[in-house]
Length: 385
Image (cartoon, rainbow, N blue to C red):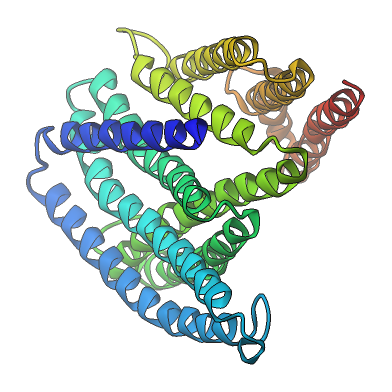
């Protein structure tokens, strides 16, 4: 029980930090003139889309709740009324928190994008921090919400399958939120190009074209709200799967211990990210990632030794941590503007579009090899320990 409560407390801390970042971003200078007006249009459009989407998804979720009440985990007429009600409530909790993750994302994104653009007039540092801390609001809220939801459910029920129903609720909403936003933004993008560039000769992304505003609305609802719901789904699904696997072994406390310590390490890493005058934003982000990785490894090792967890379980976690670091490093290597792959693709473009496509596609395929190899080695090594 201690580690479930610990994870819940760290989740609450993540909400406090997210609220602090939200207030910090909101306190930055307000945009004036066209920039502020365009930002207001995008914000209003994003909220309108989200409200309409959630109304439709509410009907779908309601239908699923009825089915769960009637049939899961057993037909209600067989006398399992309480179990079915608990499962339905867990499903509702997953859908509500998934929707909340998307709403929080839209709320901060439509503020941070304008604040970041306004701050860019003052310099890179403030502009970067506005964008980074704006993104951190949703990141901390998503992880904190998923961990808090799983902790509360397990504290109240002590049943691993209940968390699966919670995860299913998150998944059902995230699927439509991500797909619906993606379809909308792509439709608006193509419409903006056809009506603006092709028919009227208006430059791309010119705000005089109403479809450009719709395109930016789509970017927010698809890449922010939809992504927020998707990340919430992925996070709670990984927690639920780990709990189901750990329950027969009596190691459920380890999931919440490492989950809470991981969130604590992330909070420290996010707070430590800074861009020095003349510094590169990518380097600041990488330093934050590396710092978080080291802190997480140290905290989990200390907890393993102090509370006498099985060291092999920490080793498996550490191997997975290294695998994730390798994947991040590989992505940086193949996409960095200072890396050889990008330079060679740029060089190939001098010979025409065909060489650009072939070279870029080849590097894209090759870039997956180190990640696949790292995952395979990590899986085998984790099994062996």
